[in-house]
Each structure stands twice: as structure tokens, then as C-alpha cells.
Amino acid sequence: MAARRLESGTVLVDVGEVSPAGRVVVYARVSSGDQRSDLDRQVARLTEWATANGHVVGEVVCEVGSGVSGKHPRIRRVCDT
Figure 1: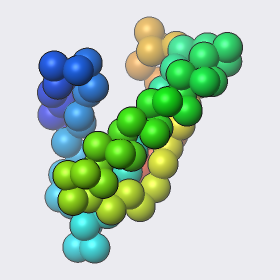
Figure 2: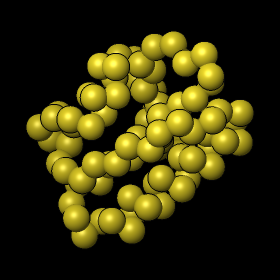
Figure 3: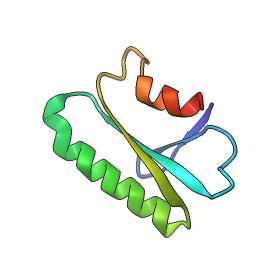
Figure 4: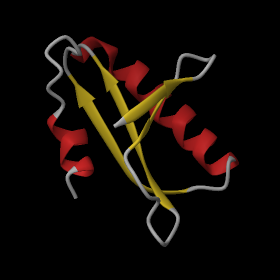
């Protein structure tokens, strides 16, 4: 998967073609449970960005867990479909 980081720090991951309906998946992750409010803000910011850029958010995927292991089962489920 190709990824790029925007100046804002947001990371966009290209997982292939956009579905014919033009729907996208918004993915947000924080490293610990005490950052739940940060997770909510991420989802809001990403959804706002996607909508403002003409995308229809078809699914929101959230995870809480360390990024060190590289294991992100919820986003892998989306990428494998």
C-alpha cells in the first residue's frame, strides 16, 4: 500500500480503486484507551475532510492500540475486502 503524509500530519493510504459508488473508508487510531476523545476528534476531522473533498464516507473504522507492532486488524479487514 502506498501512503503519504499531509502537512497537517494526516496520513493518507492508497489501498486501490475507489468503489464505483465513490465511497471511502475513514480510519482513525490512537495508542491507548485514555485517548478516546482524541479518536473522536480524528474521526470528525477526517470525515469533514473527506466530505469537503467530494467523497462519501461509507465506513468509519476505529482502533485503539499501539502502532509499534504494526498489527491493525480492523484496517487490514478493510484492505483485504
